[in-house]
Length: 349
Image (cartoon, rainbow, N blue to C red; front, side, top):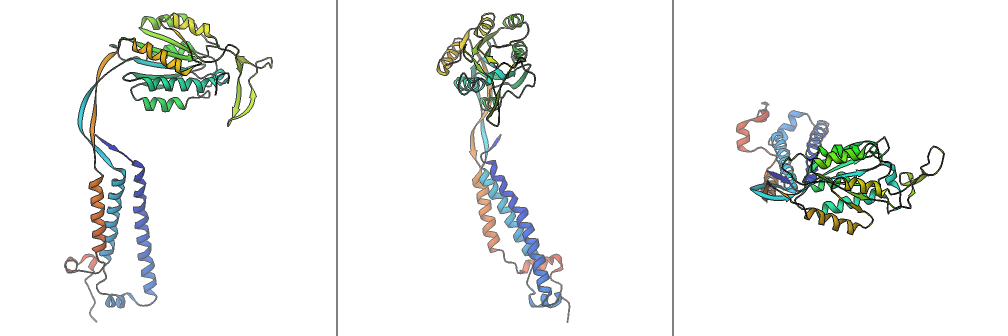
């Protein structure tokens, strides 16, 4: 197993083709310039020890030095030991509402951004658990499959927005159905689904789907984001307000938190409803919920004790640079014996 600490330095390799092109251009330019003053036969007699092969060799050595220098800057690391790490955790899936009503700004900066902040903070508080993320509006879609890679989960979470689903609505039923497929470990006794939503405009027969999920051992906890007083839904472009959403009667739409809907869903699935207004309170309650559950123990193997390898490439680059400096462009005895490119042939006068 290996790691590349700074792969961006592979861009140094682009200097090699630039060096080769520059070398070829200098050869062509020198040959044309010399031909204006003397013919090739006279130039050969005036500089009998000049070697084209040595010049090519110097460029080749310098290119190898750049290659080694690039790898030294990247600093490849090799894992020298594998350890089996025991982890305990719960499978936690987040279903995030990305419908247009989540753009309401009754909670700063808006409901959707607040929801993403809550999920991020919850993930930060987890330890050996596995997480998955689902987005839903008029339909549900998988955003992050069940994983232990929290960094990737938070990266994909940050990119979620209301434009990800063309059909509007709040298809909580589809989100729950999709969540069922996330729990792929049959030995996992505790399966948790957090639904983060304003609870408005839910579609389908939620109670039957919730009951099926509860029978599968899935505990559903709902987190309500929004206020009872509600707020209009701003439609923005490039961060600039264009208008507020209106209904078929041209009346401004006011979206409100439907805590009752979320409470019913949670109570029917052995869970609880959590008010998402205060982030700290939400994290504390979620942490208490997860800590109170029996966690499955599982093993995972991972490479540890990675050792730097840059020193070998740096040493090679320094050696090649010194060798390139000491390598002269004139012919030497061993090169004359090789007679590469027929450089040793001279016409008798």
